Image 1 (cartoon, rainbow, N blue to C red):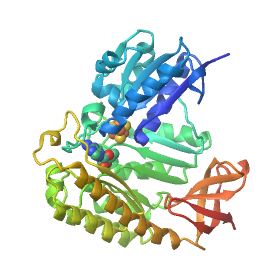
Image 2: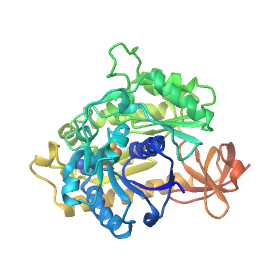
Image 3: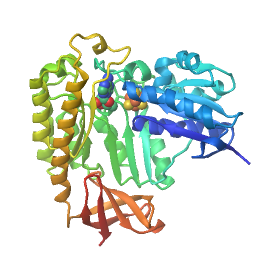
Image 4: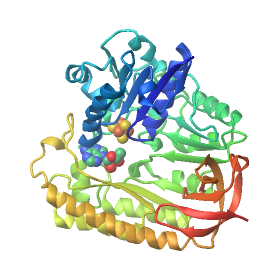
Length: 433
Ligand code: 5AD
Ligand code: SF4
């Protein structure tokens, strides 16, 4: 019997893909079967996030659970952003952990696994930083990294410290990966990077041909068999007209875009070092909507950033009102180590931040309720990619909305016309037409 791996992934899409890289790297050594049963695992890996304090505390509570249920011989590995930021401290606090491997070091997994209490978290890089074996949890849609790290210095964000400097992955490697994914059944690719539209600024090799994100999108869309392209996340600062026009007019690019706002107040944005104003953000959203009236825009919002006043928060609410985001990921500001904002004066009391978060989310639910209700009776092209319980299959519309229909395996990997017959806040029910 082969060995069994239990892997838990916290955090963002980047981490979800990194977990696939981890599995691919393990399989190069010896085959592992995935298990959801902790007590039968030979290897337990938790792929962590450190963007806020909460997922960091979750790491230590999870290690407590692993200790309780694991087989005595099972090894525990901590990977991802908290591994990068806490490093050896994880082993000092929880000696039951066997190895720690940073977000940028997955290709060193084999080296680390054989040495008890090994820690590999350096943020230098070479080509091995982004070259891995093959593994995908879902063969119908393929996440493909186009860059690693981040070259910004948003004052609240720990990511540049955990994932290191931004480097773009050479175009040929990306195209090769896209082709391979298509050959194994993917019609949809999701390009991943911390700031995707900054692509092409920093390569490891100085003679890499010059290319920007807009050109990369064109190249990916020329790959035979690719029918849908998504990407996450673009930075509002780099959303020039050329990029927005490619987004609008390239029929393979799905009309869904995540534009992280963070705050609607120009004063707060300046303190966050985001590089744009409220007006620029609104202007970019208007431009996208002018080009693609039905576009679905999603965003990230932080409330309670140091010195955020009621008026600043009202600016955030104002942007919410005007842009009518389809989806928001909203958070209370969480002071992080290695960040400038953690030592800013006037940290906002928790009760105030909580109240702001509640009112933001409440208003957004109302906006979303309206958006979703309008879907009733509409017909969408849905790409089916997942089997669900109770004889249902799920997929996404071009605009990224989740739709389920009655059906079975034969729908997987197909794009079908679906009429929406029932709506709720976070998903839609449909029937094939
Ligand atoms: N506190 C709260 N939210 C944060 N994010 C990043 N850093 C912090 C922080 N210190 C949010 C941002 C980012 C998302 C991934 O997490 O909104 O876009
Ligand atoms: Fe993703 Fe940021 Fe969390 Fe790292 S810290 S897993 S980059 S959200």
